Image: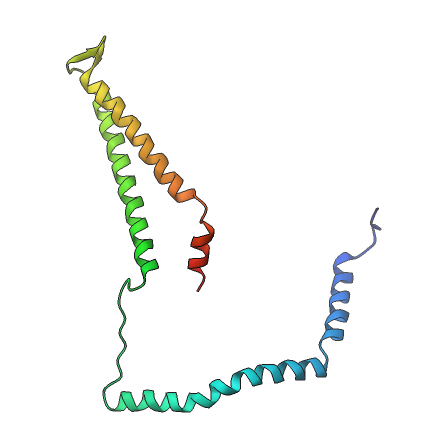
Length: 155
């Protein structure tokens, strides 16, 4: 299957879309969709004047107040806690890595195994701990949200 070199794909797509929309959008379909929308809006519009009157009355008598609490929702607290955990793991991993580099750069310490001193052994252990914490942070950052997380984020 080959296309003709002179075939104007964009022009034909625009023409097709114009014909399709002109067939689909007729006065009858517009009238029908407006009727459905107004039918759904009528109950809400009937209650609107009473609600506006209550709000205006409360504001007039000084009883109108708005109560906003920071982190009132459980999802917000969970999100902030997760961010705090990631920051703490990052700081701990970076600190352990820095301490490992300092310890590996120093000479001395009691010999433990052959020519390896105690400070170098502690440095290597801190380097492993730093790598584990760094990988844990990366795993938390790049993990995909589970289906339950996606359902919770949709409001």
